[in-house]
Image: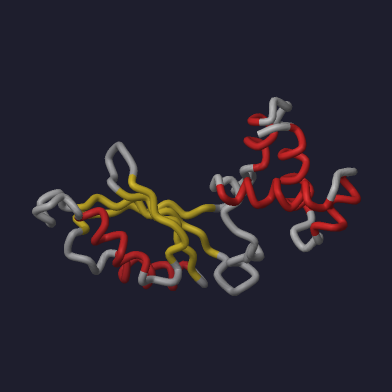
Length: 162
């Protein structure tokens, strides 16, 4: 990552519908340079997608919660219980992401629901897998810092993250 990579990422993060030609004009570099930087960043896995960011709240799911799941370690003889439960959770549209974790739980799932009553249905559906021993749920009240990665790009390019 260098300063031009950072500037390209910042520009497209702020204006994702901007064309490469307009980006090159704003950055003061050739169109081919911008395209090559984008291609290289995508090939390295730095840029992971170009789709629109969607708001669960605006789509009708205003409740966000985190499920900490403890799974049976003896469920799968080959130790693949995490994968089996992950596949189960991937089949539930309200499950937005799942991470394998350390500590008291084995998996952490971010889920959304239409209401607290609907959240109970989402939890029940998630817990329907026989490899899940127990769970705990934390409901998010607000999001003071939403998901972000751009400060890391600034830091990687040797710039202060602010």
